Image 1 (cartoon, rainbow, N blue to C red):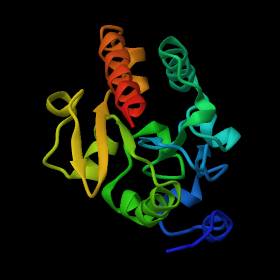
Image 2: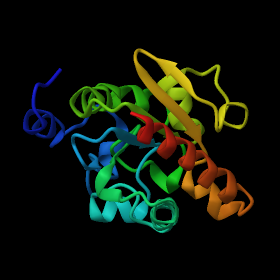
Image 3: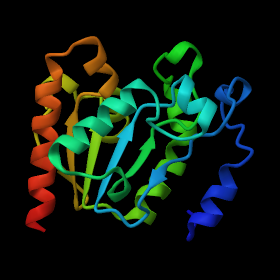
Image 4: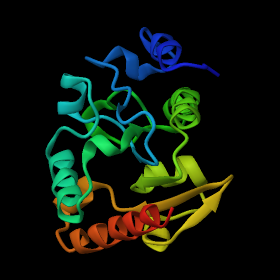
Length: 184
């Protein structure tokens, strides 16, 4: 594990641990407050993220920003990362070997940020972080605590683009997170 952000970021610069390196434009490492109490983890970069090298800057990211605004949270207050750091072709879900290739980078990000709460955005994040036995529909909106960190699984913002009825639940879940943060 790396002791500093600089060491960690340098370690991923030329990563070729999985086949996603062959089709990426940019490694999408993570962004935000490196001392945040709140961290959000998605599945992987999309086309806009791959092009710009930053997570959640496409349509789903814009929707997430609107949700933050609605509850009074600023993007600069949180740290955002993904399970995989390179875009899977055609925005497919990351394969298990791809997720495993990136897992130590993500673990190291969590160690360096030291968040109190992690929001797991969608099924891919939930299953890769907490285990394959979890399902997003059953787990969404419920606190899960492991190793001193509170996890809140919720819908991935891209799911809100496909099904607008999930927006209310997404906002509700983020409000629960904000309430918990304000207690601490």
